[in-house]
Structure formats: structure tokens, C-alpha cells
Image (cartoon, rainbow over all chains, first blue to last red):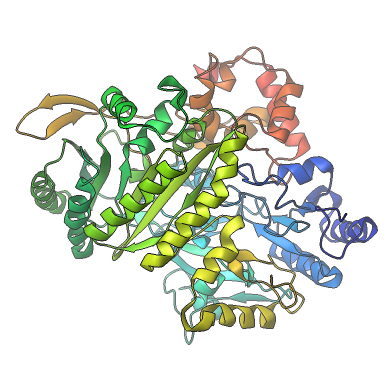
Length: 516
Length: 121
């Protein structure tokens, strides 16, 4: 039987040769092939512990070392899986899709070049949200980040996987403005104005001249991004808003149909996220405090948890950023609209520059506490998310919720769902919390996930992002024109990566000869 | 993003007006501990976002052990810290060598083993 931690077609001796080549190019202190390294880069939240096993890891710290490493990978036909900081927990973390790949850990690339006048920053992939926050604090810069619920990870890694934050700059991939990329064959390109030698506008104008390629390197395996410019939000003069709770599952329709127009009109400039009671409760308590009954929680337990923490069935936080006078006028519009649809509670918030600040995602403060939800079931917890894109319609959201909630009950899982607003869409994030020490529960996760993908497909809803296990499944669901987009991706892959060494299988894109 | 848990204060005219819990503290980073060096600096850089006040690690440890802040502990042998970090423990993922080198982890572990530290107060 083949060793699952060896690259396809490799024996131990050939892998050792490649390891020696990496050591020669990078130095032995940046090459990690001990057994502990192989377990250290596995997916902490894996559904299948035997999947996605790395052969080892390398840690280049310069663009030249990334180039050298990719040339060695081509020489040996060795698959390499780049990670920025590997904290993409719930989507695979630091693990490669293809077992036997060598993880390229870029967490040692931590340069920050900040343009204080214009609020643009040139980042390397190892710069985490806490690193950039620290830089801003240390230099007293008047800018806010856009942080995700788990801010342990990389700033540009998050943007390159289309992660989100909660300020007006919340769709982080839209804040990218020009990349530096090492192509699979080792050449370096810069996109946007970065292609123009000595242009002072690399971080200012995202498009350059001719085709724009930035999104080509997002969620793809067409290159290793070694630098990216991002825009940061100037610290506002004022922040106002409200945290609003609603009592009934059916209230979701009115919430979406009230918030959506305000978002499209840009009265609301940030991206609110409607979440159910468990999204809040799973951070603060564990299931075992309430019941030992298997299966999805019944309404009496849900009611008791809601009463303890004063939670609605749904809740949403809305925030307005900018000049105080403008915010006051916008807040009045917001208050009138939300009060008209019968909320259970409204908690207003108001901040003016100079006052004590709210340290939360709404002020771009990095946080990690939301990940406490992995302890909901106890044991070695984890989660994955099923996240289809929906129209920004209350009836569509309510129908999707009702279908999905029924499936959670059918599979005996507690429902944690949210509906996050973009400008014209909703991202419906359905978190599957689990306990890896409960084999019966773990056996249900895969069929449950596949059922949700199939249900959504029937409605025309596709996922925006997914775990390693489901990249082929989700890619196949984008099937218009006989899978024309997938075929284009494959042609690009084969043109840029003729030896198929870079992140095989990422987003369902496989090299020639390796397609499942 | 999780909603902050709220406490209802006043019921008036249908919707309740609710009061916030104590606000979460400002994150601890090197900028808030100027001049720190060695294992403490490495701990702040690599660990404190989860193991500081309001961090995930602190919140989960507080359900089982006090004090939950690692810097406040007087019972963390260096070798235990190293094994826990490298292999992961409970809900904590492993910290690989590409992220924190053996020498850096040793310095962090020796810092924690010398606790409790005043910085945690």
C-alpha cells in the first residue's frame, strides 16, 4: 500500500532528494520534514483524519526563495501547497488538498509598507491581522482594519480566499489593489500599476492597462501571491448603530427586506450579518449545560438558552460610519425602518472619535473569541461551513432557512446559521459544529454536507468558498455551458503550470493527467 | 461574527432597549507592551491573541481551570508548553515550526514556566 504522506509517484528516497534540494536553496532551518511537521500542518478540523496529509513543509521568506522552491518543485514534479498563515480553519487550515504535497508556509514573510497619507498598505502573506493592528497602534495611524471573526490569520490570505469583515471595507477581496505573484514556473509578475516600472500608484489604481488579473489569483492555483496592496478605511469621526434582536424564525423575511434596500442605497455601508441564537450562544455556553439528549435541540431547550442570554431567534448588528452629522441623520432612517418591523429589542450604540472605543469587529479590532463555538458539543471540536450565495430577498432567505433547518433536524445537528449582506447578495453561512470524539456524529457530516449542496443546487444557489473535501463537488456545481468555466480554468492551469506542481485540486482545478 | 450577548434593561413600547455587558478590552500587542524582549515578546507576538484577555484560548480554558491566562499560571513546565504547542491540545491547533521555530518556542515556554508574571494582572 502506498504511503499516503508521499507525493504521487514518489518513494522515500526521491522525497529525500527533493528535501535536500530545498535545504540547499533555502537553508535547513526553513525545511521541515520530521514526523511532527507532517502532523503539525494537518487540518485540525478535518472530517477525515486520513485525508490531506502533507509530506513536509518549507518556509521561504523572500520572493527569491519562493522562486527557487518552485523551480525545485518543477524539477522533481513535486506538488506544493502554499499557505499564507494556515489559519483558514473550517476550510482546511494549513493542510494541502492532495496528500503528499509539500506545504509552502509563507508565515515568515511579514513585511509591511504603509502609505500613511493615502491609507494603502503593501503586505506580505505572513502579516496577520494582529500584526497589522500592532503596526497601526505602534505608529498611531488613523486607519481601521476589516477583521474576520477569527483574526488569527493572514490579512491578504483572507482577501485571497474572499473572507469578509464587518466594516464598510468588509468585502476584503475588493480592497486588493495590485499583486506581486510568482507563477508556477518561477517568473514574477506584478499586476495593475505594479506592471509599470516605478509607478507611485500601484496601491492606488487597481486596474492598470488592459486585462485585470487580480481576481485570477484569488481562490486559484495559478500563482503564489508574495505581495498585495490593500486599502484601509480611514478612522471615521463617528460610529453609530444598533444591535437588534427578533423573536421568531419567520422574522428573517422582514429583516432581509428591510436591511437590503438600506444596504443597496448605501445608507448602510457595512455588510451586516443576521445570525441565529446559536451563533451567539455557542460562544458563551456548551450544549452539555442544557441537555444530554441526542439529535437537534428541541424548542424548549432553545427557549431556555435564549432566555438565559436574552437572545432573539435572530439578531443583527447594524453600524453607520463617517461624519457625525451625517450619521445622526442616517441613524434616524435606520431606527425608523427597524422599529417598524417589530424587533424584540434594540440596543443603540454611539461613538465619537476621542471617546472609549468598542473593541469589536465593527471597529476592525482583531478578535479570536468567536472560535469558542467549536467547544459547543465538547470534545475535540471543530466546524465546517456550507455557504451558498442567495439573492438579497426575504422570501428567498426564509425558504432557504426553512429547507436547511429541516435538514439539520433530519441529520440530528444543531443549527447555526447566518445571512451576511453583500451589496446585492446574501451569503448564507451554515456552520456545522461537531465533536471529533463522537464517531456517530462525524459519520453524519459528509452525507449531510452533500445533501445541502444538492438542495441548494436545485434552487440555483452555489457556494462561495468551501472546505478541501468539497472543492471538486462545488466546482462541478458551476456547470453552465457544459462546465465551460471549469474548462477555461483547466486551460489556464495547463498553460501556466505545465508540470502541475502548484496546489493541485484547489477550487476543483487539477493539472492535466491528474483530473479525477 | 458573533453577536455580543446583551442584557435587556427596559421594556418600553414594544421593542426593548437593551444594555451592553462590560466592553471587551483592547487587544494586547507589542505596541501595548513597549520594550518587552525575549520569550515575553515572542509570547505577545505569537500567542496572546488567543491566550490574552478575551481570547479564544482564555475563554475555553476558563471553563476548566483558573487562572485561565497562561501568563498568570505558576504550574506550566516548559516541556509541557512545547508539547502542547507542537501537537495541539483540546481545541488548539498545532503550531508548526514554519510559524514558530524551535528556539522561539523554547523561549516562550521558558517565559511561561517562570510565571506567574505581573503583566497578566
